Length: 334
Image 1 (cartoon, rainbow, N blue to C red):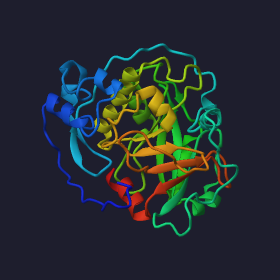
Image 2: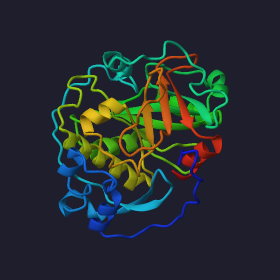
Image 3: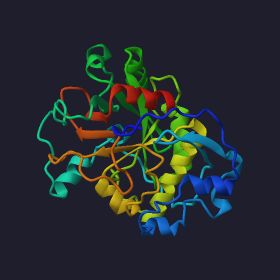
Image 4: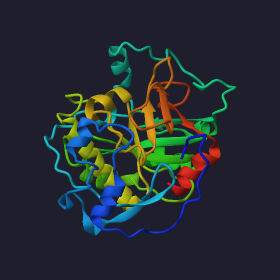
């Protein structure tokens, strides 16, 4: 997908019919090159591989993966704990909202100020500038911002009750100025199921279309702004929740969503599962002077990197790991 050492593949436009058990087994098979992680093992040899009750056979569908392959997908339906908590400040919840605090607590050294591009100018790897925004930025003057970015992600939803009041401006604005755009969902895993939140996201701006200007939706899964770091879920339960969201989105939109997270959080709350690495592009949040840092198990490269929460442009500052042609491929083919 965005790995610079991989050729862009010509995607096959075909629907693969498969039974629910086979589809689920192919969908989220664990990385066979390493021993299973505890969270993976708790779900069986492959997420959704053995229990027909855990997949929606009637919804068997297909989607394109991070590597450009078209694969069968059946939405998983794992039970995960629901302990609703009041969303008292959803307008303040955004990508990386707790990232700087977490990295300071971990003893790392965040970038101290605006950085035009975190990669050296002579790097062989193209890094395209972009931003992610939320209602915290309000309505944006895209005529002045659009010339400086190649992509924009805007927060669309949170849990199953919140919609960004500035979403129309932040999502349609870049599109109208020829900038590739995408939407993201801020997950609250203990408020409702991953399935329910994926459906809410899709219904309120998070869908994907193969128009060459719309990126697959992104799942923002990170430190809990309302309480316990992992939302009171075990590593196995969190992995199951993410599976429910990811497979529901993929089955309905025919593209796997981007997963945005922090490597430390991913290790703590999923057991560093590799179950999604072959399916979903990864967006790493890292404000360290050491660069993007280590990635979660299974991902050999990042697709997006959020490298600071402030800069000369509105919102968080990001880069895409590849040339413009690859970004367009992701928008066109998922």
